[in-house]
Image (tube, rainbow, N blue to C red; front, side, top):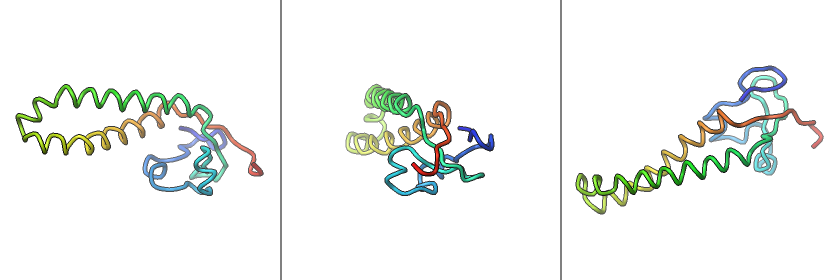
Length: 114
């Protein structure tokens, strides 16, 4: 996603995942963040699309694991195959979330007084 003020990358995947990006926790939960280059306050304006796509990606990853479960069960055993489900889902979920936010998220400049 590109900052509308400086036309550079507003945030990185690691910064998005592991920091509040220069705003308070309550503002971060509302979709606000600051550009890492120019410090302009920005907000996600189409968050519903990315959330719906992330849910769809989660459902697809569960379906893939269910399809591959018989193969995993024969390869490593039942208990380990069941134990690998949550790390698989977590890894796929984070990967898709980072990809979808990077591709589909749109941002807009916001007045600092908000």
